[in-house]
Length: 233
Image (cartoon, rainbow, N blue to C red; front, side, top):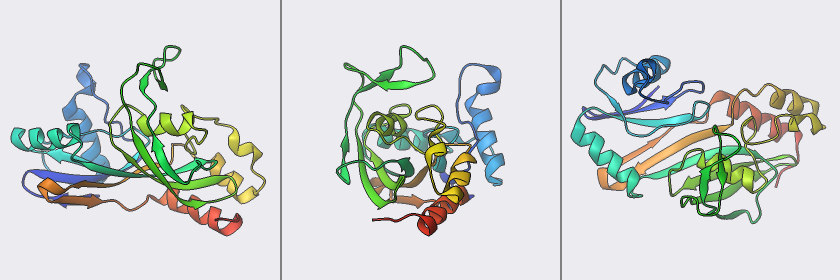
């Protein structure tokens, strides 16, 4: 879905399952990543766009593209200098304590698994603010604001503090749903095929940009199941 458009910038609502990964491989170019994204969003935004930032393959929500080199440079600088405010939502196991706080563990590559990042002394600075929106018996709905942009940052921070994202089979216990007593909730959790992480909003005040994406259907369905069957606080 197209969320925002100017001649130089567009914002798309990325669905789950679209890889924005790039490399020097012929089939992993930035042009291919943009083509996958625009095709999945069903928007004829044309060619010549460049990715300003990336989301993990399972993450949904706001992605910015720039057309000109000047627009790309300006937007990239906003992200690198902390002038782009990013807001995410996540449904997580357990509930962080206190209900609002900051994770600031340094992150680096996991020496035991090259696919993963991990909390590592001497790693790169990483800061994630969080707030609990709703707390259920087994899970919690969080709003998160990463102040840095490390690979898998939110996923690693949440897992390191005992609240991995529901559906995250890379950072968390993939069979945790088996211990849930509520059968409707257990079935919903068993069907998850991605981490329930959503890039809800990007604000860049200096450029007059403020874009939001609604929660995706799978996130909404699980919230409804939680609200109908579990006590909440």
